Length: 213
Image 1 (spheres, rainbow, N blue to C red):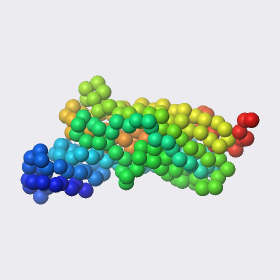
Image 2: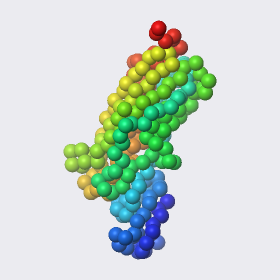
Image 3: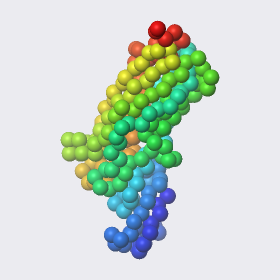
Image 4: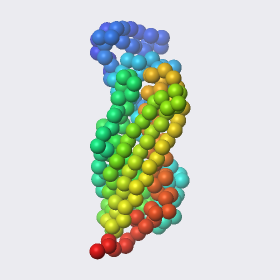
C-alpha cells in the first residue's frame, strides 16, 4: 500500500505520485507484485522499502527432515548495527513490522515446521545472535550483496557460526537498485538458512547431548 501526503499528480492507469518535494510517501507493499517500471516510479517517492515474506526452501526443509530431530526456536538477538538506509532512497525493512532478527528467527521456524521438526517443548532449543546484517546496492557498480553472520547456540552446549554472502543484480539507478536489494533480502535469508542446516556441524547442534561440565 502506498500512502502519500501533500500534492499529488495522476499518472496513466490512475496511479498517483508526488507533485513536488514537499510531498512524502510511505511504501508498504510486496515489491515482487508490482511491475519493474512502476516500481521505479513508486520507489523514487517513498521512504520505506519492504522486503518480501519468507518462502520455505525445499533443500533446507528436506535436509532438516532427514535428520530426524525436533527442536524449539528461542529468541534471536539483533545485530548491534543495521544500516537500513539505501542510497537515500529509503529504508529496507522486513515485512509485517518484523526486525531483522525476528525475520531470520521466523525463517528457521518455518523451515522446521515444513519438515515436521518443530516442537515448542522439544528437548533441544536453538537461540541465535545476528552478529552482522549488511547490504550493498552498488557492488561492482551494478551488482548487489547481502551479508549475514549468525551464531546459533543449542541447549546441548554446542554452538555454530555461519556467514553468508548473497550476490544479485541490482542495476545502476538508485531507485531500481534499492528495490532489487529489498527483494533480494528474502532469498538471501533463504540462502543463509540453507547453508546453516546443511552444514556438517548442524546435526550435532540439534542432537540431545549433555552440555559439557
